[in-house]
Length: 612
Image (tube, rainbow, N blue to C red; front, side, top):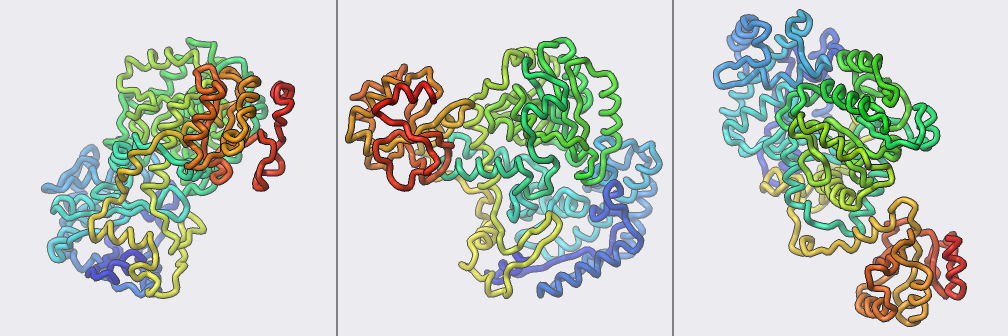
């Protein structure tokens, strides 16, 4: 409604249409989460009418576009369908059953629907009836109003999926909005539902070759660190705070002398069967069983199966009972080197990410976060990262064991800068470029919004950059995710190189200053006598743009520019706070150097280097 007010203030004619109790089932109430109460539609209408009145928004009810004969026809048609026809049923050109399928899966929280079960059949039939009612009403609405564009929530669930499909069939441009991947952000997607991976892949095609700068690296790494603590996720956290490696291994009854593989399951009932999420495996269970058998044949590794907490835990949105039962059965016959962590166990998935040598995923975002740590990842189904160069994607089940076999020698210390570099670019695009900050509406919980503005004057053009951007996307067809500029395409990898070198496990980063090194050639010479390419030490040289050429000359004069020389990186380390600093190498450092940093004295550097 905030966006609609803004569009009207920018000259658009707005029609806001709400449901007035047309459906016998809808995604407001899922049986597996919050069963539909008596008088559900009356309460919902009252709440919505009160909210739109408070926000000064004109609206109309969708029921004005539906006739009594059409309600009777929807009942006749839905009741005449055989159980096995329900989720593939068509009415004329409308693929009603398929459009309702994901809602039925979410309603029962089942990845596979057994329509021979009378209870599931009744629910599916109710959704299919409701879907045809939505088709009748929304088709007439679009015929009468003939909009230039449609702003639509979600696009995946029941009537919103119908609206998306009918609008696309009429070549009406649809902008779908959904909660963003960070708190108080939203996503705008063009002509696809919120489950579609096409916008994510298009973003990667555009930006995958563009290096991140220091500020972008800082933002994405700070966000990833916050996610490990359950903050700034745009949704409720499903995992607890990380534990120490020793605590986790003790809890698992494992030792650190063998590589640890972690298989992260997915609560996939919302996307199972979706075109973008297909897998060469027949099911997630089949993939898990194949992986367990591989571990059974290779006792030199340990395998941990982390059942997704959203499958059914105190933090989950309902429970996928069928999947829980499947996991319980699998847990009864595990080899000695395999452990299963149930969804309610508090062992943090992020602790497992740090411990593991290899991560295996179905559709989970965990795959991206693992890759950002430089860890190898095997993706067994369609996901945001499947098909990218930084992930091993399973395209052929017969090649699966070969893929795993090639990764047997990998250890937890074998992190890859190449994997991390690309994954961090992908993560920045997903979490920042595609997400639109929306501070006008506070988000104290994932289900609650509170207005931060007091009058519509605050929504006028030029008052809020994010709202201006949303308006341009809807009215002017501005791309929801911007394309890189020529300047961004021309970036070098310097900031990424410095960041990746400095964060390697066990590595120490020592701060120095370009001006001092240029003025005193003996400093670089002393450094070169103490450190070489085999030492886990990086000299991070605080450098301004006008010092770069002179610094390069000083490094060459000191003979430190060869392949066997010490690792040197230049950048703005004090400004960006991008990498952890462990010491400072200087005769007289400026006052803004952190006081807690130990000093390396150039006069006795060799002795101090040994201690370091």
